[in-house]
Image 1 (cartoon, rainbow, N blue to C red):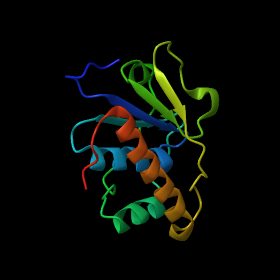
Image 2: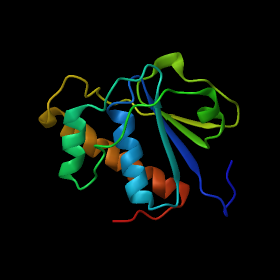
Image 3: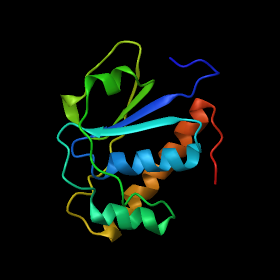
Image 4: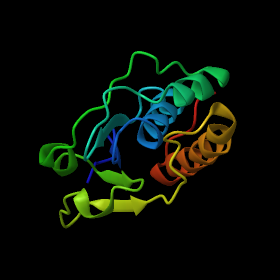
Length: 140
């Protein structure tokens, strides 16, 4: 686990790393303002980030248009303090001593921006709660 002088490391994982985990990582990067190391990955990454997710994030001032889905590695899990799964099932490796959170959220795959907005807003709320739990004040 991290000590008070180190930045906590958080890994967001979902199957395709094209929607939920990208939004979680983007909000934590934005609101954590450099005080949290942020990663995201997928157990079966897509080719691109969901365009409706990119648009929904743009609406709240967070640009993820340059992001690309990344493959989940054992090392990424091992080197993270907190691992947040978002529908990756049993594909995420488990290491004792890590903090695991499972955020059950609707999958935005194949949905339009109208359906993505409530998912986005729920993820932002959970990220704000996570920051408070980590003792990191959210930037605005």
